[in-house]
Image 1 (cartoon, each protein chain N blue to C red):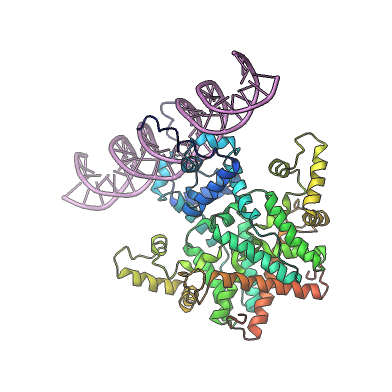
Image 2: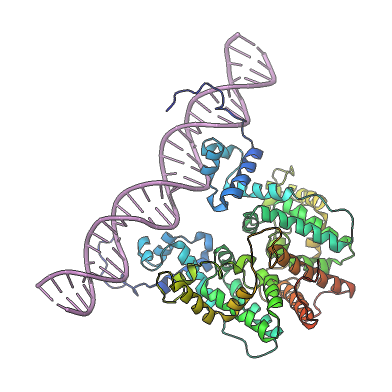
Length: 248
Length: 248
DNA sequence: CACGGTAGGTGTACGTCGTACACTCGTCAA
DNA sequence: TTGACGAGTGTACGACGTACACCTACCGTG
């Protein structure tokens, strides 16, 4: 083992949360998410494993950060068009990102609550429906129906906002460090940052308390809504003798 | 440490692959899939960890077995009806099972190739479309469009059948232990067992070799097919002023 | 009845993982 | 000059999956 390298080359750029995240994304892209461990990542960065913990709290937060990095990279918004092509392009753009980073869909699904960039993305899609004149009601069910196609997020997406979410303040660059009344402040900040998500979350009586009955929005209804929409579509196509590639 | 218990109570029912699987499912139902480890499961069964390996090859196979146990429990087939309500009821039945076992969707998605029971399930759904007069073409795209709603399986589902799948023979109770010509035998056995899946897989030119171009069936096309079906549906509903709960 | 094979349960051990905790060191403000 | 502080280090612990050698109770056969 060489005792002491001449002091150059050994100390590279001094590491940072951003560099850690970027390296993690690159590593996962190349070697797969299951190969990503704190130790391997540290090795990749030429550093001892524990050094990473000065920049991310733990592996969970590392994964959150990786999702943020990917989702934040989605292009801002498509030029003005009807809601339909706007939504279409936005979602296809998101899909492209998830195809580029094969691990991302799985990781996003595994997160217990959405990260800020994901919320921002959802907010923009909801905004497109609203701008197209969709009712809150229809927008809500449409979002559920799109389900995993709107990125890779499952239907339990809308859980977090109304809940006492410690995540939103912890991960987001919102100030509000602690204390009790600060929570309402955080809620307000969120309403400003994600107006459409907030509007939707507020308008819908999302009572998950009763699994079976429970008026308002239950998972079952959303599932059937999407299922029937698809089945009706199949029926229509079948009826008119549809065959592949009707669209260029 | 008690030297020697009176010899009763200590040796319970003698363990078996089935008992291991059942215990694993029960444990995951109760404690969550992330809490399930070989050691914990062994403890739950009052046995030393390595004892499990006499009944399952490794943890991967344990998870496969758990999926099998859940999926195999789906009721056989609904009484004769039009394709639409048949498919509908079958899928809702599958969904019920996945709701009962919250871990199942995630585990199914994580499997690299479908287990026999999953194949059988798919086969039955495909069969329903075919019985309804659907073309192979439309059936194929419909299955992709249903995507995660058909259980929890992703779109890369149809990879395995045409590939040199060592899994199909390894996991399935098909005999054919090894050797080269046995492979075609296994393929025939599969065609018998899952006729519709085989038909579909054979008819479709599933070339994943070229990600971008590649005539035939590419992921991108399937994604857009489903997306457009949904968007068209939304447009129609929006146009006719749809509001919640039009169906009982 | 003795006996050897075998299936099923055991014990020990290894390498890997995430990460707690105490440390060293270089930098910069006072 | 000092002393606080933040970034990187080293050591250690308790999980995890599982390889491998072992024991042991049972079996059909001689």
